[in-house]
Amino acid sequence: MKDIAPYYRLVESYRNEYDRVCHKTLLNIGFWPDGTNEQKDKVVSHLNARYKNELTLFEEADTKVAEWVNRFWNEMIKNKTIDRKAMEQKHRLVKADTIKHKEAREIGTECPPERNGQGYVPTHGTG
Image (cartoon, rainbow, N blue to C red):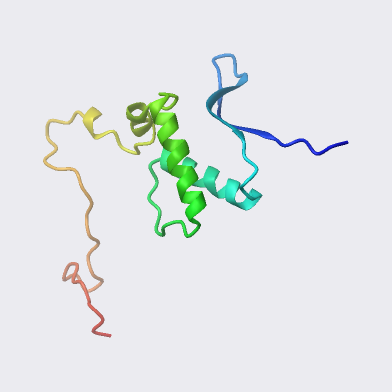
């Protein structure tokens, strides 16, 4: 049998109200002969991270992967198959705009005190 080139599409899987697994096509990529399996896996990983609004520590070294990620992402935004506003709300850990507490003065993080009870004192390599 002849090798048949696969046809690629990006899909989102979810469960409906009847607990049935469904798929929504986000982008029909089509035939993608010029990418290796490793490159395709990286593209999927980068798109998932971008969808979840996760920061990356390092830029992608493979320029083809970065190009595909940007192209596919922009196509999904243009085609309105992903909703950026809903996406940002979906992946927020704390929805600050829904907090209702009249006594709260600020929202933020606290620095842990030093063991000697003097408070947090940053050290800059004074070793």
